[in-house]
Length: 432
Image (cartoon, rainbow, N blue to C red):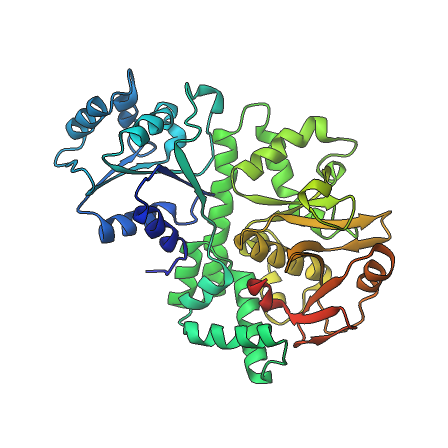
């Protein structure tokens, strides 16, 4: 069993005296169903699962009124042997996006409160307009991602004490033992190639075969394309697929700002904006918004018309590249993709730590890869593929834009690049 941090969030939810229904969101194949079933086995006497995609007849249960006793009676008829005991039963509504009425019923199940309810949805195909009464205020939302870097290390069998040992160098800003640093960079390169999709990680842990990893990843990418064809609106199908396939090309441009012209020459947001938003809602991509000013509050300074797009799982991004890219990355030779790959992995790590993504760009002459709120200061984050400690863009931010703190992430060890700039190894992004 892969150890997942989200299990602690589920346990914390169960410990609350007043529990709303829990909606577990996330892209397909990140492990939502598996983790809820494991949670149910460990913490409940009775678990009833309704998967609306595997068994479409379950949708009939939620036709008509939303009286909880009637819903329970219908479930007991549809699922022989199911038992509903207050406080001891978990009702798991899987792939709830396929049953809008079940989404509405969450309000009434939450008000009733006798049974714990977790709903899971990949966001694919959720017809918001079809939901007769959106259960605002009656559900708690949690987003699940593919494995983060720390969870990947756990899967490889790395003792948590080792990770805490590395964290000590981060907190003290002291140089990591060279052998430890080299090993951590090797693990990071493995994570970049493998990514965090549970099926892919399990395959890698069992076989250590990167060709099998690539086959598994490309199956997932094919499933995503199938989902686009199945769930996107007819007018969005081809456009969403075109946006999806353009992501590697977007990231190798000098200016990594998303350009609709890369998707189709002469096109713009009017034609492709909705399709790109669909990919975000499906949990496939992350947006990184441009700041108008490099200062807090970051959200208040964001220009939503200018943004970069990153894949939410870097392993899947690598699988979209040409054959041979895996070996090049493992060898540390990233070619034209070096900036794109490292930026994507840092963005991925930040997002999995709960951060929204922002960057700064000025007249195409100055770009700072990321900005984060760090120790209550707007902090510039520069991602480099080399160990060169020169930080011209960072110095410009500090001298000309009043930025007080910078962090440079690179393959090198811990150090300084001026009084206000910390240099940290790329893998320490997981601690930021």
